[in-house]
Image (cartoon, rainbow, N blue to C red):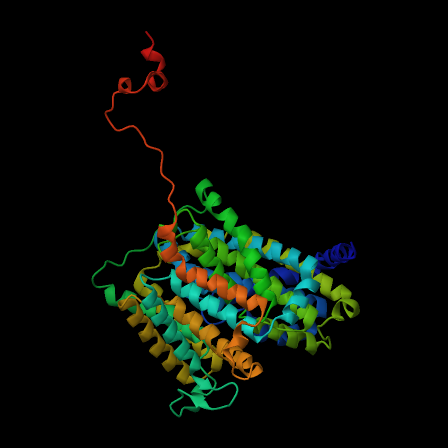
Length: 523
């Protein structure tokens, strides 16, 4: 009841006209910036930090929350329409959203993403209000072996469900892990795969890899085939979800927060892992698994809901522990410190009004995100009416601008082009792109947690499976690997035999014959 009363007080602050204006500005700015490839919510918040110097802390953080959620949805928009993720958490949206857009269903994919963000954000924020202390305690107890097990589970899950073969999936993962090795060793400081270049000492930014593999690789692939195929604009389609779409999406919308919120609260990769795992889950549970990879709407609804709920979990961990689990949370932590506020267990006592106003503004931001972006889905989808040569030249331009904005180094453009050529070759030989991206994102973290776990166990491999949590994760992983061989062995349900075409009902027994007679057959 104390939390509920505090939340109601927070709504009183968040719904004031001025703070409502800051929330709307944040959502619009976040969506607009998130649409640009390479400029995600973390960079948006960082760029806007100086702008908020004149604001009071409550207004500043309400605007930051709007930027956070708006940036996540903006990244999903370009992922779906242009196959160009604005940030790493939006990578999964491209897998099913872009084929939907190519089939003339871009507006439906954007609507599923917007409602997914709303549902995941609202349920995740409710969980933040109710479960923040318990999640904080769980996050403290999880150690290096558990983190490593979670990341290996993500590797196995994403490579076992994508592409035409597991060999190609693991080959793509190996490419991503190799790119993740570039730079300085996090524990010894030794250079790896830098070829003597100082610019590569900091490693390759994951956004450059994602934009290169998806956007540049896609643009080069399309350019290589434009002479064979006529460059026709793609139809936008009807701007609403029909009854069948709603029937297929409401369960993924509700399942997403169950995966996204816990992973957002622990430092295990931010929103990337839960979006990947949500995609895997929806493919396993779908009644239409053959549509995955060709435009299954469940593959957009579930991961986007998980992504938004993960953002709520991330904020919960930062507020209760002072532990930033994503780059955006780290920037927001710096913003708290800029105002002389230290997040942690005492924050809810010392700055109760600010914290509850921020949490209430998350609900307000979700509503604004839905109200502003759901009607704009057909407008965004009209980007696909642009002729493909102009569209993809624009993608190349914005991808280059986004890559250059990350580090401000010309070498980033060279790296972007090289990775784009790798993406082109991967498409040519049928390698899925997503395992490579997850290898870059999680590879360095997995290596660090592996070495920490081995150090704690003096090099004994049993140190990787010495907790109940890690044993459970490895059990799930084993099930994923052996399921394709176990599935044919399970007894199959026999379908009910239907009468053969042309069969005379009179050949059946008296009861069956009577059942097949119509009213006109009566004597």
